Image 1: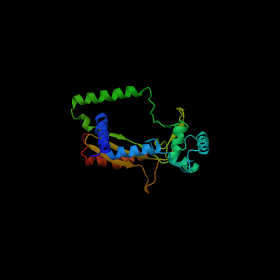
Image 2: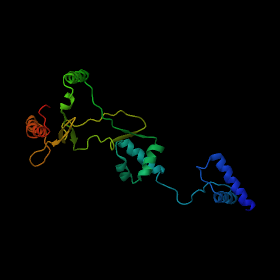
Image 3: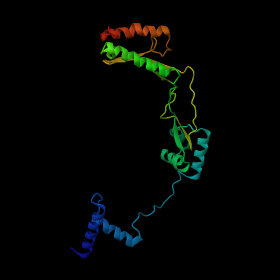
Image 4: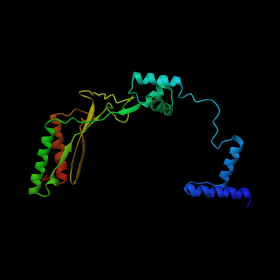
Length: 232
């Protein structure tokens, strides 16, 4: 082994003794770094030459500022199409250059004065019957009617407001938006498949008292018979 190779091997051993063997270093790597230092006076990567990047230029930054000021709710996908800027560059300008943050809508449910008392009443009702019949909870059927809005109302993943601070904006919704209502039931032994409120040709309809009664008599009660729901 030559003196140079011995020095390279000693350097590798010293490196492993200080940093451990989780960091990989070989004699050839040490040799390359030495030759690079002799040629350019540094072991760092050389600066890339060529045409400078213009995606984050002052012109694009000003365009993004104007777009955000005009409509801070514009999604990034639409903004990059209108401004002809790549997604990564637009994201960099918004977060790094302008120091903005995407505030997403938070869905909340207003608590009314009677809500607490109603919940306590329900819990007391369950406990009272459970003491008489240990299987009472398995005989209860819960139902719900979720509404799926067809106009894309409040999609928290796509709806955001770009700003330097939370503006606490209140987003209002239509009084009677177009939507489809689905009813389903669940119990300890399983669920009742969803029921879609539609007319004879499959079009979405608003739920009326008559339609809800038809759902119970023509759909829910037969399903209840199928699961032996006499004691439900």
